[in-house]
Image (cartoon, rainbow, N blue to C red):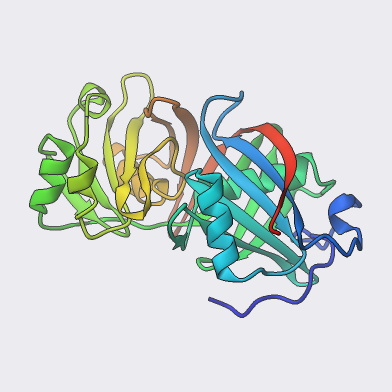
Length: 292
């Protein structure tokens, strides 16, 4: 990962627009110990749906142990940490157990916070991450994530994957995650995974997918190996899902639903080596946390 950025100046967008003035930018000496934190339901147009993520606004990087402890205390699938500098916005993501290299819903949540609550008036944000520079653009009440494409390649089928899912897929491929393709939405909705067994599969997560009944495709995402039994809506999984379904259906623009119990809707774009993932977000809570 890149070295930490210098202490934060106001967050800026790709065109250099100041994000405005808020309590987050004050020079309070206690700012390190009291961290502004939002909880946002991502890929949702109302609370109690989509995927909740915490967004913590930092004036500088805290030790990794503190970041991991905050994420574990939050016990959400992801906590996003943001540090702004004159060169851009640095973004990191933590599950309750590990730091990850890419997270869609927490990126969407972070952008929502800056657009909706922290006074950023531009249309495009850029985040410096472990996966390179990610651009995020707002389109009315939708937010578009520009992410790398991660096509999956056909591979062998681990026995623990089939046992863990409780049903054999018709096709298995792999990128960062395993992609398990089923014949129907009903099969995907009906999966009752054995998470202890799935946690032995050597990957970040397992994507189960099938054609949708009322959309182009559906999916579910299981990642017990990194502390997330089932993720409600997973933007990064669509870096693999979009190229697969775009190639299979023969068109670049798709409508997807993640059919977890909370559920969420995503608009998808296949753009070659990049994918566009569009979603909405709803703020659940605004507050602060103390680290001492």
